[in-house]
Length: 161
Image 1 (cartoon, rainbow, N blue to C red):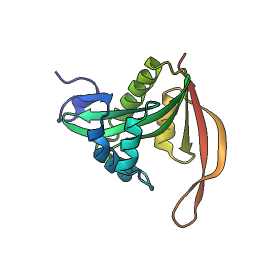
Image 2 (cartoon, rainbow, N blue to C red):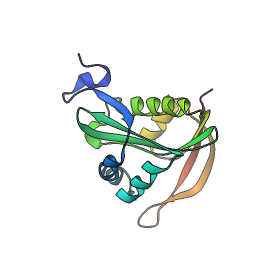
Image 3 (tube, one colour):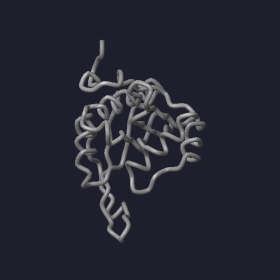
Image 4 (cartoon, rainbow, N blue to C red):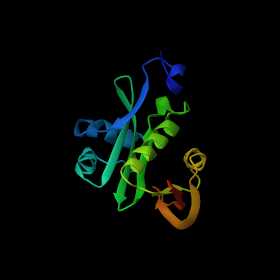
């Protein structure tokens, strides 16, 4: 029996689990497809070996189609990046990934989560607001894009306790 959002397509059940070093190349590919400045395989390898970094992967069947990365300090964490392959968006997988990742952070003793999101990134804002994150601040012209465009970042927070 297929469960959760995966019932809408073939390919297997969606699973969120800890990423390993062998995932570094695929995670770098996904990041490069999702963001203007992608992180390289070596950056993912470094994060995957750091004790204070939690990297979860989203797998559908045998295919890694997403990830979430957070850095932890004491009882706080910051979500550094979250991405789902374009071919798998719009199916509720990012919500499942985010909520499961938050559960994994809570299991590590994290009580407060922070993140930054581009102010005009409506899909990401809907995801975070739907997961009970609230806006706590704004950074003017934080993101710099090719061609010189500068966009604002919203600072968001969620308490897990």
